Length: 353
Image 1 (spheres, rainbow, N blue to C red):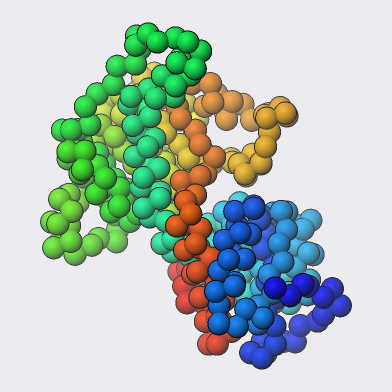
Image 2: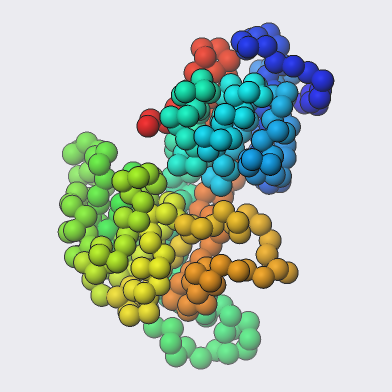
């Protein structure tokens, strides 16, 4: 892999015969390993240069993109209008999201500034679905408490009673939910689904679920698993009003985006018992904390501290996607998006406003 030349400049147009330079923000070691491995598999790896930074894209770090044609960002990088305007002046022509969500990028501003956006629409549906099921089973069978008890020499079973999954009703919201549906059907659950992008009837019949309205899911589901994108229509979809429509003691699972749930309303519902448990891989104010180590620092987010203190809440730090297969897929699709842009001027996968 070629190293970055700080004195290099970019022309207004991409030269297909020159080295294409990309800066990856918010890099973790597993990102670097998967992208470096995929780069070696390309037909002409010498045509690409990837540089890595642990920094998130922000108003302070945007200047690091100088000298590159492209940046690659993740879920908590700041793709605001302010930063996109700076990126345009720097010479960035392409932003590649190595994730399925794109709520952190101002798509209208990107279009105005003539910056193309690519993303990875379906890199880890199995990984996310399996993590959602793991959260359900951990909550149901109190595995987190059982593990800690045995580690401390306590082998009592009091307080660890769960329920049979077989026969329970699960409500699944969103497209990745198709993979979740397969898992819960395997447990013998009845599955109700809500999604504005419906699959064909023959596929639905094969999976064995029923499309219903949201209120039907709220009224009937023992477990609700959320797999929706975050936008202005879905922000705080789960709120005080919708929670009151749910069965008392419902288990809520969110492996999508934190902003889909009004966290204060969730806390109130956990206190009252309206929500019996919550398995959360995301949190609406996660940007400061997730993907960072605060074990030796004070967490000064009172809402997050409350969630962490509840025995019937499982909180993981946005790791549902994190499997070897998903990381390989992310790298593969990101390079495909990059190649399509270099060849045709547009990424293979572009988000719709």
